[in-house]
Image (cartoon, rainbow, N blue to C red; front, side):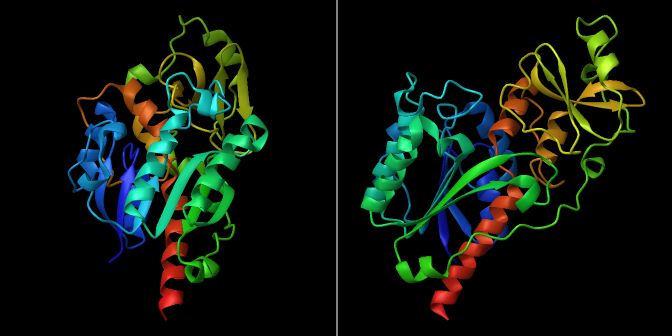
Length: 319
């Protein structure tokens, strides 16, 4: 069985996709205390919660595949797009992965980030990352994929996926998965008819209620509150979940139900990321943190399909 080490693991979405494809996660690192509580509730390994800069390579068990959804705020359209110049060093944390790759020499690397990474700083940021990996000997494949096209998940969520192989024969056998038909509907994920806790509904005395009532008219789509106006997603897709959707009023996905206009619940946010019904949320974590965890996570079925393609490339080379 091929072993994986996961960095910036979050709640373990990448880990879950690779486990579903038959890989074994032997190590995971996540510095966020709140995200680690969700991770530990759903994964059967001990989580290393230290800052990655404090983790020495010799302390990590040997592994075949490095997994990392490295911090994306520095490259995100929703963030400041500072990249490697990010004053909080979030962008520069990529070089901690480079350090670990240099010293551990995993045969395969899998990286996930926001779509904007490709064009950030006129392509120079992505060029640095690509050349870093190639200088380490990796043959690189990358592709921007949307959850609704590649994961059968009705969310408009584009991300870049980077896969690198030390073995050129395995690399030659690898292909990213093809598009698949979207058959899952938002109605299968969000229960429009069930009444949820009152805290998720907008009250008539709220500042924005009149705007919401005027513009949210369909029970067949997901809307979005954009600070000062309502945006309708006419494609019947959920808009891209964001990490800040639980902190105030911006980019909050909304639905119209027989019981009123409401936000998605944190559990619904994880469902629209493709986490199945066995995935559990900790009871002692505030909703604001759960929304952030869901917004920072990955679409599990897309990860699983890429992991399946990696497994297929490995087995083709060995056959």
